[in-house]
Length: 102
Image (cartoon, rainbow, N blue to C red):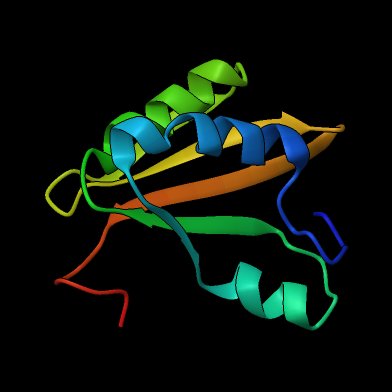
């Protein structure tokens, strides 16, 4: 629900940055990128990581006192629901499929 050039809320960006020592690379993918370029609202965020996608979703939900759900255990896809600046934010994490983002 953020409509600006920098789609990531500073608190969310700070949390993700603090996790790079564990996850090495965290990539924003999907509609949030498109909506940011079009200067439209970002209703949800999708991230891919190389490992432990379920764990980072749980950590994020815990950090922001939100909710956590496993969407697909086999494919390691999970969701964190948090509130930032009175806005409900949906954040999904999954594993990178293959060796690249492509």
